[in-house]
Length: 65
Image (cartoon, rainbow, N blue to C red):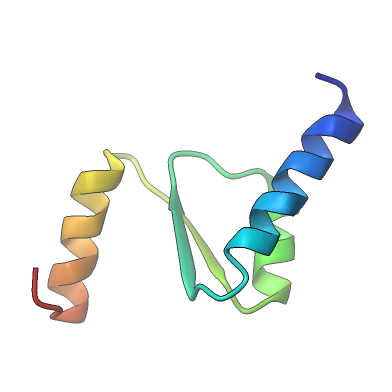
């Protein structure tokens, strides 16, 4: 994959999550992180599984599980 294809892939992903407040991920690059922040979206890198991360978010936000 060349750099253009890679950039286009994450840009289209950002379009998909443009209505979110945060994005949970195992790894996020500098450019996607910056673009998310410009849209008011927080990119959150997790050092656990996404499932475990979501459980912690539910607890933190006091949402029904």
